[in-house]
Length: 396
Image 1 (tube, rainbow, N blue to C red):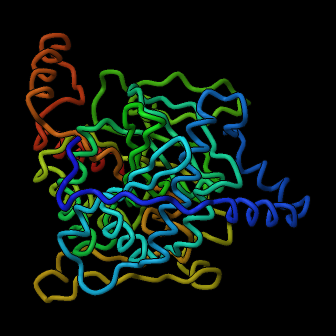
Image 2 (image 1 turned 180 degrees about the horizontal axis):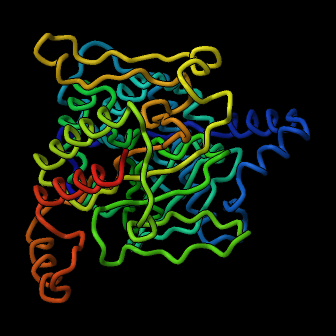
């Protein structure tokens, strides 16, 4: 992928050794109860330890991300956003590898707008504690990682996907400013990794929609179609964490109560935006968590938790279109919606597939192969409309 202007900057990376020592020291002070709770919250997930096929890549990503975040901590973006914020490419040279940070200032601003402290971001993604892996049901060849606290999700991308993401980044940021309660996944960074003189590999960092995951009972990836949309469920009592698909959801509904109208409207706003970008094949991620007795009902919510909101664009023209709501005072509140009985984790992910010639040919081939059946590769307008129809039919 050609580097956007201005030309890339290359610097020697600071060492993450101090950060590694600090993380090790902090870990040593944790009590037994904390470690047992941490293990319980990670049932079905696996640490990427020595000997794992992804261990070396993980170590390089951790060291590189520690150094990349240090740059944004030492030189935080100031003043108004500029075009250069979205086009900067910073390459940090480490021993044996290079890590590139694409549009670093733009993502630093975005993390700050979400109230995410750079120190917390660096500690979660840097050396100290291994990333986690889960059994992915995705058909792509991407590699997936979770930070040890499960707050951040990392995924490898192809060069053309990164190119599309960066081309859309200014409009994506504007959409989040205009619609601060958007269901779109919050992207936090785009990076390249080159080992020795090998080929560059790209990956993104985003907030995990399924956070905090402690009491989540079911997870789904919904595209609003039927072909290749079934996952064999894990055996009863299994510790595997599987993300199920559309056909697994048959006969079920999402009971949002008074939040339903907000959710339907936000789906319309977000899918209309993705349609304008000529994007398709994105997914609605969903997870279920049963509310405790003291968390149910309006009276209980006032006593045991407070609701908050966030501010977006303040012009009179835009404020009416924001579709704002009260947010639960909880981690990841933008992706959490409470119904009468369940807490739902909801987010739109995989926003990088453009409806170009490749996808048009794929659509033609699938039309011939699956006559009368619904599949994911359709025009962006059809895709957006169909997913909104699925949501309307499966909510109450």
